[in-house]
Length: 264
Length: 184
Image 1 (cartoon, rainbow over the protein chains, first blue to last red):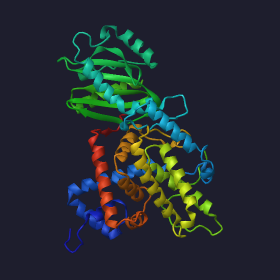
Image 2: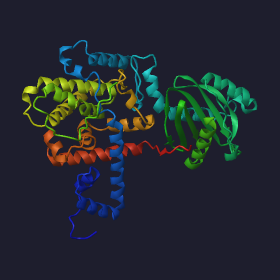
Image 3: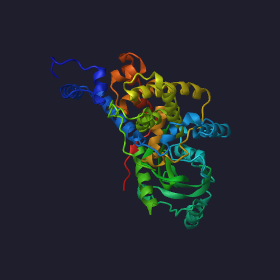
Image 4: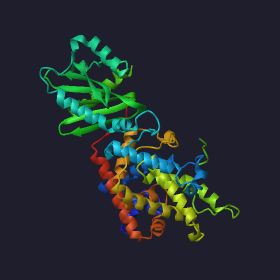
């Protein structure tokens, strides 16, 4: 960086992110950033954030058939869809509590039979439910599972039937874990399944499967809580979560192996 | 659903032909107003409500419009409505979920977990910070434009923008979630 250039201010950094700098100034800022890794990391984060926001909302900038009726809205106070929606929202808020964290992102439909609350809750709670299942059952000495690995065929047929899904119990022997067994348990308020694995040292991990109210596909995600790691994803009609007290790297391997074998 | 050409908000300040009625000018702004409303709201239905209230107010107050930059004027009105509503809704929080009319369904693309995460980060912002962030990042307004629209000094715009960006980044990081590419 040469000294005769104007110092780079925070306003410059924002203008850089927002594309308001002329070419010369933009180059100055880039040069300055290359010598200031901390600020550069932040600026890259802002850029990624902006790109994500733009992509997320770009699709809303479209006209709709009903737009013209917006112009007449004030003449139709009581029958306006807005009024109905508000009433419905208030009614829903009176009967059901949904935490702010479980904002519904699926295109759920208030007037449709599928329960929007369940849909909303399903998204955030999967890793939470998986952690709980792990904490409750992995420490269980006598009855960690309902059906043991010695009856694996029965186990997968039974749980698969309850989930309405062609379940397989992934073979994780190559990663040092063998199947202990599984149990039926509620996930997202419906029948779900938990599979448990154990390594030779007795270290356990659980794989939770739950019905996903709507078809979706997500990327993989990690969530940490203390020494517990959970790896979760949604693939089609099933949400999956793998929880264990192992390193992220190890758990990722395990989850990827599960994903591969669940895919069928 | 018709897919009208995107009336991109970034193409701004184009003065409509004089033959155009006020109503038609508003109508042509609806897509970008819809996007802005959705970027402020907690759900699609809240967004549509906000849009509707805004159009209503614009029509009621048409006499007050000074004849320049209708778009910026409408955006200002929406921002103020959003702030007022936020105050009311914080007292009576409602359940958050999406539009019932199917309007937005096909736009809800991509990774739902990612969307929840982003939406939660946005919802954690105060209305003042959120509106500045959206006006700049999504609607493409310059800092001085935003200052004029919201009748605040440009320094305030910059500090709100900084604060919003840092808060978003912190919130997104706090979730302790790492997105990974799926192996296929």
